[in-house]
Length: 614
Image (cartoon, rainbow, N blue to C red; front, side):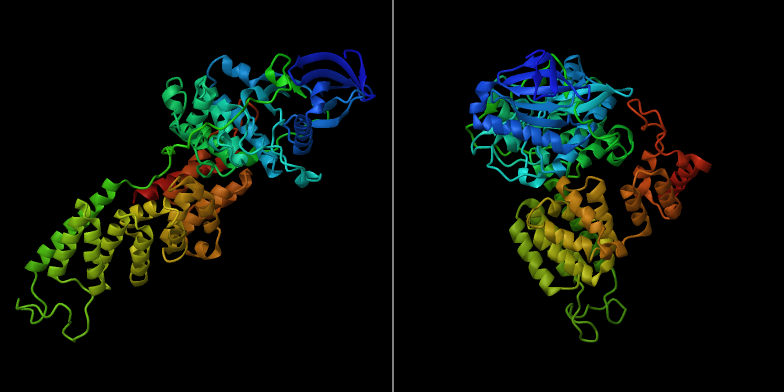
């Protein structure tokens, strides 16, 4: 084809690569004098309807994403012999595979590359497009305007594209039930099992690539493809820090990678933007994704990213394999940096502490004068006050019963202990000691909804109980229970008031509870009733976290809340002390210069730190 003119306007200059399905050529648009890349399916492939349909899907995906980190498509058609062709953006560069093969990549460089990939995916996912075959061979690094590692994402040949949503009529699904499409080394667990995929499946693949950049090897590697898929589905998530060169990866970055590699999509970051922001904060405390999201113009019409020797210059899809012939094994998912529910021994210890406290109360009560004449005479009927009204306070004997019931719970006789505590709570409905013990016993028995119901009643009688530390492990356990999470959120959004808002903030921004609850907690914090209950300090921390990247906006928030901020805001404030992080690949420019004026940021941080000591 060299020297031929295709479709009356594309002159073929050279062949850049060839695969089993077709070839890639460098061409020049004869009218615009512009270099482009031309993918051509082999003529014999045109008889295979599915392959042609996938070629068309790639064209549609590349044409509609319109993002600087995606190789854009400008034309699609058929040659006289029936072969299909696709015209793409042309840029010379080096594949990410070549970079990885040269050895581990520095954390800063790996994050820089990964954030760009996630930025491209953010746009694709907004259009409902899921790549499904992300791997180093499909990522090209080019030198653009002094940026040596400018990313281009390639090959949407097996992408899931909702045609109806981007301008055409919906066609039949190209994914057959029981078939798995993609490359096993980078495949998300749900993709390996032939289940539905979404943007979080791509996030997993990016996590594998990031792991490989940092370590020099993939998290899972096995020549047996079925065994490899089994590792993705059920294998433990390896630590980047344990495998990377010494001190090359921070604990914070390790935690973000682990979350991207979570087995369940719901345990990964909410979307590509959230993953990118987490990476940037973990790597340098730098600006959020909004600062780099669409830097530069969309892909130039008509330029395809080509590395003349790389596999992405071919037209071959990733390996197609069947799901492993076994039931998925239920394996624990390690989510680094997440406040997991407290283990059983912690609840047992807290129950024992309550029992010890009751011993002190009983001893003190036996030494105190009895109520009545004040002279140490016999006590009156414990169920009656001097006025004859029912009492809600425990007698000395009843306190001993609570202690005994708690002892049964901690020793393993949970149901027996619970029945005794239930009887005591009915007898003394207003005494907080027995109800606190009952709530903790319910939590020990994994009856989280029952535990929260007791807490709700306690809060009605004693609103200030919301700050009692005994609630923390109970809520942590409940947040990890699908059956109890709605009840827990209802309490946090209502009766828990200011303390509930504080817990919601911890779930939203500090990694407390299962990671998939973060987005829900952020929505709760935006509720007017919840906002009304929160402290000014918490309101300021939230505004700072959610503010746009603009320095002047951040400055206004800091000025507004400088006398209200508490320790909650310190991580966000300290992240802005870094004087580099913006301005191209080396990121040597200050992201927040206006905060250095008059030492505003440093003064506010010092003031908050001083207040936090008191």
